Amino acid sequence: MNIRQIVEILKAEVLTGEDDMEKEVKYAFGADLMSDVLAFVNEKTVLLTGLTNPQVIRTAEMIDISAIVYVRGKKPDDASIMLAKENNITLLRTSFTLYTTSGLLYSAGLQGIDVLGVIK
Figure 1 (cartoon, rainbow, N blue to C red):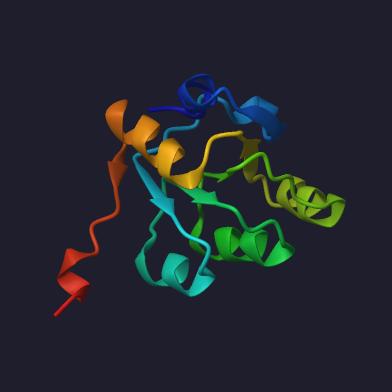
Figure 2 (cartoon, helix red, strand yellow):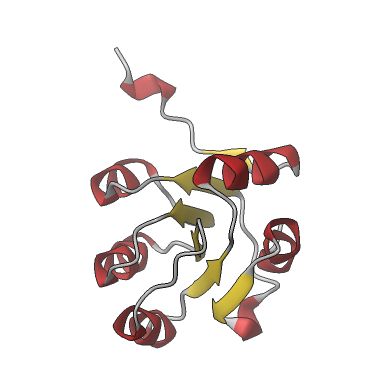
């Protein structure tokens, strides 16, 4: 799936990365805990979150996340948007909740991150 398809599925607003709509995404991961993102996420992943602070962008930069989708209509501050532009990270915004966003993308064929091996 590419980012353009994600935009269409989620009826999302593109905040940054208008030129990267053909970028491939293989996985989605929903979280508000950036420690979980660091522990489980790999490249070619779209992050679904309600957090709008610059730490989300810094985390995405560290692990080469393809795009970030802000749920519930949230919009990051100008500093986060500038940081995303500097690091070529696509930012999207949807009015759907995290649960609905996850369900829509999963129903469209986007895989989740497997963390089952972590639970003992």
